[in-house]
Amino acid sequence: MGKTDKAVLDVLLDRYGRTFAGEAGIKLSDHPKPLYQLLVLAMLLSARISAEVAVAAAKELFAAGYSTPKAMREASWQDRVDALGRGHYRRYDERTATMLGDGADLLIDRWKGDLRKLRDEAKGDDRRVAALLMEFPGIGPTGADIFLREAQAVWPQVAPHLDQRVLDGAGKLGLPRQARPLASLAHSNDELARLSAALVRVSRSKRTVDEVKSAAR
Image 1 (tube, rainbow, N blue to C red):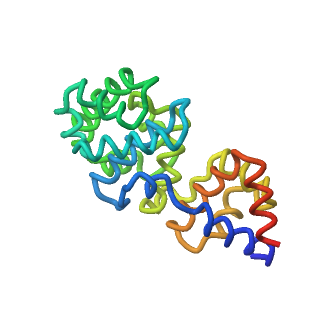
Image 2: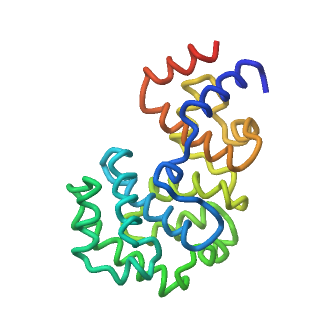
């Protein structure tokens, strides 16, 4: 790693390197409950709504006790709508409440409520994992990428998962735009997930790109 890349990486991780799961209060580990919470968050982040609102809605759902597929399925549709509303997730609250219930049903019925079984069915191949994730209501290619770039912190089988949005952010900062060279800058899968989140945030704003470049000089 060159001095310039290291300086940019240090600034990125220091200022923007918190995962979206971390923001939502998810203590990510390779266990069913936090993995399900990450799936819920990925679905919420997939909508045309701000990341801040999606994170707030996830927090409200979890605070209401809907942190497992069983609890989500047993919650009434109105309970889910109300929790989403408290997070100001209002434009999509009714449709999303339905999708959350249907998704919980699918996870329980097909994978016994455990996303590790989905991963194992896909034999740890990130493209196959993504295809299975997209069977959940509300999870398309964007949602699958969100899930995988965060899950790679605890699922080494799918790492590195660096989607186009991450690579675009890297290119704007002069970092490698190819997955393997970019992944080699991180010292662990956890750091890779943090780097991915930071690059997604940076990719949204030229002002942020300029800030990081200036601080890294």
